[in-house]
Length: 422
Ligand code: IMP
Ligand code: MG
Image (cartoon, rainbow, N blue to C red; front, side, top):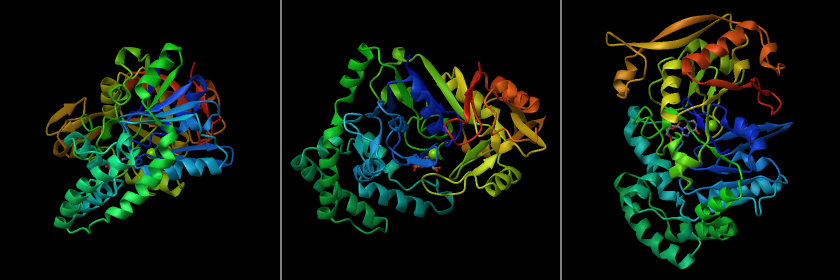
């Protein structure tokens, strides 16, 4: 059984936690897109781990993890993450494999990301400033550097020299400061040396594992509405965050995928700019007052709103979601009344799916269906049937309106606070 796990909203659905749980039934966890813009939080007992590039499957002993070709890698950040985990006693040797064709994020990507955001002013995307867009831009423009280059110092230095000259000129024209070749070369080659034992042809390795009937779990980063093709463009990230990205990002063909699990919060959140039809000050204030919904990567307060079934319905379609994992139910425990957005009213029309034009989406008004709250804590509940009746009703409505089967519910940050719905 090979499983794809995707975010069905705008990212931060709690994927790290669900992957950690699903990893129990998998042998290998594979990251296929995005970079260290992602932040996956997993809490085990008193320990809290925030992972950016390494699949959270690494926290389960014996499981193997792959950073596949579709990911963009900041090698210096990756080495920091590896060393951070090793310091906490997590052994990575022989358990982490990194694709030699994954593209590198270079310091000029980060600087360009920053400069372009600055120049956009009020129209900024609100990126994580990790250089993700410019790195994927270079990949598509065929001017990128890859791990296979970094592990060959001479090749890397020669290519870097040319790339740095061009990018320094661009940076200066945008008002940024140029980068020193020697500094970048030194820090990157150092990181390259540390990464070398992990770097391999992951396509061939993964196919070898498939032949041995190993079970793969594809860990999506970000979410459906941050997808470069299906998201609220241009307020998106630069990769395919939806199910198809797992195949192109790993070389594991689509017909080997058996199941798609969509993760969504029991409400909606988004970090960064762009339309969010169900955004609500009431929901934001309540969650922030509880100390919830601050970004794992940038610490920014997330924008919050009511559950948007128009969005998740589309996410189910694009990803082919079979099963749903609903997280953060406990965030709604105190509410007297809840709302779910079931359609949009937009320019005189009623819409069942989100429009592709960001301007039109800004004009959309949610049509809400009201639900009674349960006003009791769900954090100790471990069986669906033990949830308050109003919470069961609410969860069933989320699944029905999205059009997929409810499979997992989570009521807190701890590993144990997750249960299967039979
Ligand atoms: P970028 O991926 O840094 O270019 O940012 C593009 C948009 O995606 C911004 O709105 C970010 O806030 C958002 N974004 C990127 N990665 C994540 C994530 O892991 N969770 C939530 N939002 C993200
Ligand atoms: Mg996150």
